[in-house]
Length: 511
Ligand code: BG6
View (cartoon, helix red, strand yellow):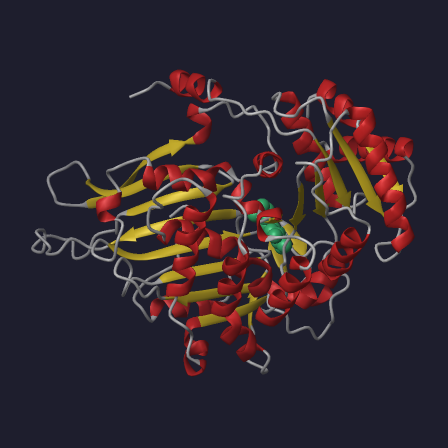
C-alpha cells in the first residue's frame, strides 16, 4: 500500500492542462457567489497555474461600480469573509477584472458590454473565446440569454468558442424546466450549455466514481443481492439565512432533491460507463433516473415526509423557527426538510430502497451516502446472546469529514460471544494535502474552459429529475401534512416512522 506521502506526491504529479484563453463574463457579478466562490476559485486556478495569462473577467450587474471600485469591493469583502487564497494570485486576478453597470433587460447595456468584452479581449490577448456565467436569480436566465443572443455575444466566430454556465435551479417544475431549455436553445446549442451542480465540484463526489470504478473489490457486492438499502443524507445546521424569499418559492424538495441528492443517487446506482467521456457518463446517470419507480399518487403519503423546523437549540444557542425567519410568511407551509423512499426498477437494484433526506437546522452538518449491507444468511451464533448483528455499513462521507468508513462487527474479547461494531476508516486529510484550500468551483470552471461537460447536467437529466418528483410537487400543492421538528434535532418523527415501517432506521450522528 502507498504511504500517505507517496499518494500525495502522485496526486501532485498528475498532468495539468492549462485552460483556453477566454473572457469570463459574470452576470450578477456584485452578488455573493462571485465573492465567495467564483473569484476565489479563479485565484486558486491561477495559483495552480491552470489559467493562462490570456484571461480576463468582465462583471455585469445593476449595482453601481467601476473597474476600480469593484476590485476594491471584492478585495474588502473577501477579507471580511476570511476567504483564504494566495495573495499574489488574487492580485493577478484583480488586474484582470472589469465591470459594467447595467440592467439585465436593457439592450443598450449589452452593446456597451460587447465593447467592454472586446476591449478586455484585446488588452489580454484572449482571442474570441467567451464564457458567460449566469450568477443571477433564475427569473433573469431567459432574459439574459435572449439579450446575449441579440447583442451577438453568443456567436462563435473564426474558430472561437462561446459557452454559458447556468446555475440551479433549472426551472421550478417539469414544464418550466422545458420552457427554459427551449428559450436557451434558441441562442445556444447543447454542447455550449453548462448546467452547473456544485456538488459535482466536490472532490468526494468525484471520488465516488474512482471508488466504484477504480477498485474491483466492491463492484461484485454493489447490488440488491448484498445491499439491504442505501441512505443518502444532506443535513445542514444553517437555517434559510438571508434567502427566505427564494426558499419560500422552492422548499427543500425543489432546492436539493432533483439536483444534489439525485446526483449522489445516480453516481451511487449507475452502471459503469464504457468510456470516461461526457456523454457516456451522462447516459448512465440518466438511466438511473429513468428507472426510478414512479410515485403513484396514492402512495406519495407513504413514500415522502415533509417537515418544517420550529424554534430550537443549536450549538447551545436558541434559534428561531422557520416562520420567524426574515422574508418568510408567518403562516408558511414550505418544507425545510424532506425524506423520500425511492425504488429503482432495474436488475441491479430491484427491491433495494434508496432513502433520501435533506433538511435545514438539523442536529449536525453532514452529507453522506451509507450503503447498508444485508444480514448474514443464517445466524451461526443463534444460541448465544446475539440475535441480530449490527449491519455492515460502508459510508462515503462527502462533507465535512471527507472520507470513507466500513463498519463491521467484531467479537468483544472475553469468554462470551459478544459483538461490537468497529470501523475501518480512510480520511482524506491523512493521505492528501488538506492544507490546499478549494472552493469546489475550480474544477467546474476549468472544465468549462477546456470544453469538458462530464460534470455538468444535460437537458435530459434535468427533465428526468423533475419528472421523478412531479407527483410529489403536485401532491404537496394539496394541504398535505407538514410535520414539525425542532431546530437542532434530526428531523420529524414521521421520517423515523417511514424507516421503522420497513424495520430500518436512519443513521443519526456518528452511529
Ligand atoms: C444549494 C442550496 O444549492 O446548496 C442551499 O440552494 C444549500 O439551500 C446548499 O444550503 C448546500 O450546499 P453545500 O455545498 O453547503 O452542501
